[in-house]
Length: 355
Image 1 (tube, rainbow, N blue to C red):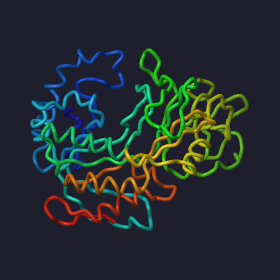
Image 2 (cartoon, rainbow, N blue to C red):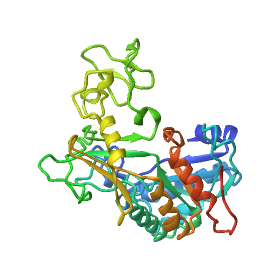
Image 3 (spheres, rainbow, N blue to C red):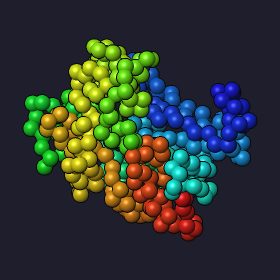
Image 4 (cartoon, rainbow, N blue to C red):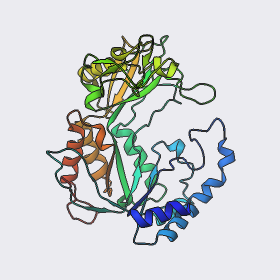
């Protein structure tokens, strides 16, 4: 802890605490029960206060907070004000996009990064939108209800889609996208069962795969280096050759190795072409009956709706995205966020924009 603080004081201006699940429901929830983490609920605001005392008022401190109400264990009406008091943040954004992002204006904000995405995860039993307008609005209201000032809220955007394997026994159709049964996303010990995942809006994820240039010399594979695995080995979604279920099941890349699971890349390309919009909830989705997958993601028109119905309506402090480098296919999501910010007048009445 001392080393972290000293490192930040010497080298960096902002600190971000990405402890999303104080009080429980973290990755180890099967190994360590929530009751064993009960002390974290009261210790979390004290932890932030000590960091603030250590770095002083000249350094900026932000936190990332969960989007699902069931995960807001430490964010109680009693402790909320103590948490909000300790945190502030100067948001300086950068990107490698050459044409539209040649410069950024510094945007001074006092913000909490709310992860208004991943509103469905592998612990769920039925389909849902992972970042719908309705779901994000409910998330923001949940934090307002525990006294988080709206000007301290940074609305999160997800530059990736999520998929879930549909229960083969269920009759899931495009007419009823939400509430359809999905297969278990976790094993009994809480580890990933490989039946769900995510795909970013990067060139390598969306463009049709090229033919491999040869056999991989270092066990890496996929569209980034265009190597294929040796015969009998699978190319995992992360771009590594291997023989385990994690390499060969859902997300494996059939153009670059053996593949026992679903071709999620091909499925997502179908989803982008044939996807539908749930106008009521404000989410984009696709039911792939061929691959038995449910897809959920965000489009540029839904980003515009979020600015109108959430950012502007609730007078939020700003926005954030996870992550800027995940939109390289056409930069359309990032441009939609830019457009929304350019037209947004912050709570102080000053136009806040970045280019």
